[in-house]
Image (cartoon, rainbow, N blue to C red; front, top):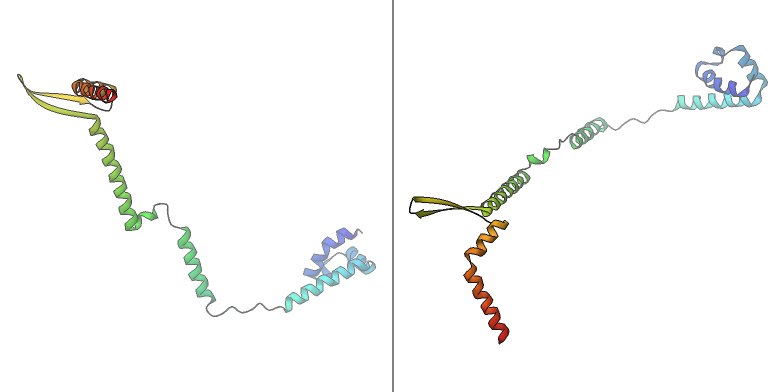
Amino acid sequence: MNCEKIRSELMEAVLSGPESVSGETRQHLQNCAACSKELASYQQTMALLDQWQPPEPTPYFSSRLRARVREEARKTSSPWFAWIRRPIVATAAVGLIALGAGLLESGRLNQIRTSTVAGNDGLVTRTAVTDTAVGDLQYLDKNADLFAEFDALDEQAQTE
């Protein structure tokens, strides 16, 4: 019989006793010194393991273990929106949202301005668009005289 096959069956012989193995295996163990030595080593190891006594845990082991498990469960089970429970963070988030909305609205107010002017036919509403090309041209048209005076000042400064 092959020693490799016998060695795979040796663990069975150790665990269940030598009488549970086949007669062919027992005969090989009697004739092969290496296999019988390995079987004896297995049996000695199992005997030592049978004598070993695990250490007793301390009296507070189970309570400390439960506390540690609760702590770890609390760390890992917080949902993504748990930060909103903190009042300072929630207040800051609401403030930032309000600030952003205010900036968006003020940007829209700068772009479109309406003015009401009293005319011959009654009140007339005019809409001036700023921050666009049309608004820039309207601004330049209204203030052409002012810009002409600036040009005159520039020419005067160059001659001096």
